[in-house]
Image (tube, rainbow, N blue to C red):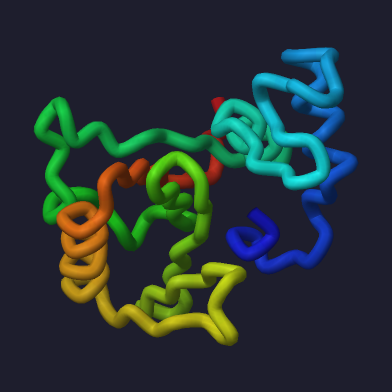
Length: 141
């Protein structure tokens, strides 16, 4: 999530643990986080992102939501989860999308919108489970 906002230590383990404890007080076998490892539940990540003034919405492929029709350029960023365990971020920087996965040595340039859609379709096709969330700035009432 720090990669999403490009602010180091915006979200610390302590901050996320505090949010997780609101849902489950247990320390070792907490339903929303893995002790010392993190692996936070999406509910914890969403609450942390909401606290910064952003909304998170899952792309629902089961309801026919198509990658090619989404307004990619309006999103603040993407959170992607692979197989229920690994999270990474994709960001649009000056019209070019980058994979900001912390396991990479440096950001991976995906390319323009069409290349992003190809990239996401490949991920979906080659990965057992892909969860895709878009992040938008909250609208003022």
